Image (tube, rainbow, N blue to C red; front, side, top):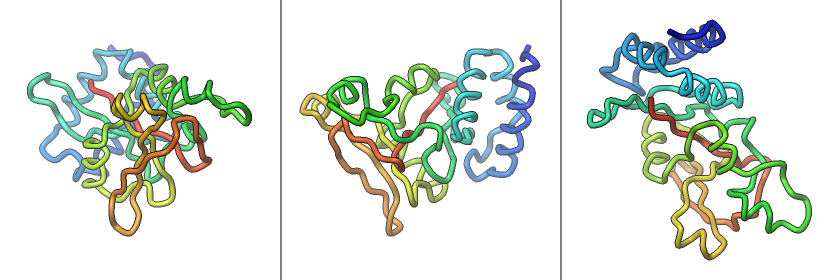
Length: 181
């Protein structure tokens, strides 16, 4: 059963779930909660998503694996995950003004993954996200090998996928995560 330290998190997640039924039509909170209560490691990851401003919420259910899918659903890219390079190589290639961290290492430490382009576009079907910020997304190895990385945002009622050097970072660029439970 769930540890007391996650009781407050479960209350927040349930409230968010109930306020945003459009994100998970046909899903039942009691089933989500039961899965969460059986996996303290996933609860710890959700707790990190919440603590860094991600506002995680259920966005789907994978019938093949029996897993609930959580995305960061904060209006803007999570505040506690901004001003980061894409990955460790990008961070180490900076000669000066290095940020404190990078998106891939932070996500791995949290037990989550960056959204893919497809997942990012799916998220944008559930609302309007990243109207003032941008989010690093998973980048194909072929692009990363050449020094680039992808990020996305929503402007002019359109989702844009862009590229930048993996070593770049901006105060308004962070990353959104996905967690399967």
